[in-house]
Length: 56
Image (cartoon, rainbow, N blue to C red):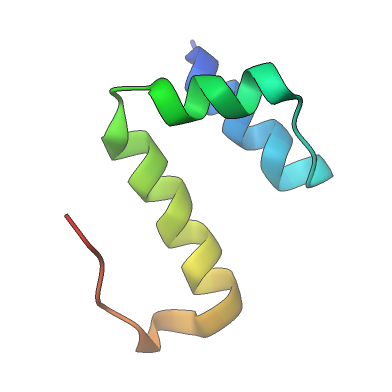
């Protein structure tokens, strides 16, 4: 079963648009592992595997 953060991130990838409540939910989430994973997917999409630095 998908979590709320996963559903919101999927919507962001598909539509490139989120409502204000969804953006706030992402910013307030403590589930940084899924958020960083999504950020890595975006990085790979635009820069490939050439960039390895990420703030932890």
